[in-house]
Amino acid sequence: EWINSALDQVGSFLGPSESDPFGQLGINIFIRDNFLNDKGQLVVDPSLVFNSGVIFEGHDMLTQTTMTIKSIQIEGADSFKEMDILNTIGKHTLQNKLKLGFLHIVMEMEAEMKAS
Image (tube, rainbow, N blue to C red; front, side, top):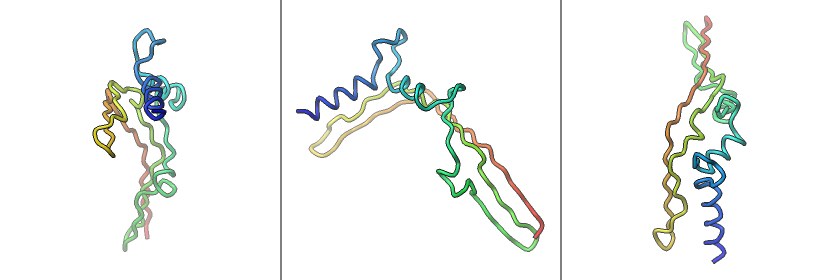
């Protein structure tokens, strides 16, 4: 029974906000207040995803090439339209449904080519 209570608490925290006059989902408010910059972007350090941001290194007879991701920004992380999580649909199965209004990923990359 305590699990059901905990799930209800999570649902009420992340679901429609009673204090917001526009009825935004709590998850959007939480993400906006804790993870996004002043432009509404989630900035990700490329080295967390790729080793030092390097996504390609190549060397042939003529060139030595390196491609690096310099920055990653995610826009729309706070655009959840629907959130229906942790619904029991079987003895050992939970179902989740999430809908985003939009999600844009912006990456700045650098390609460097040198003579071999």
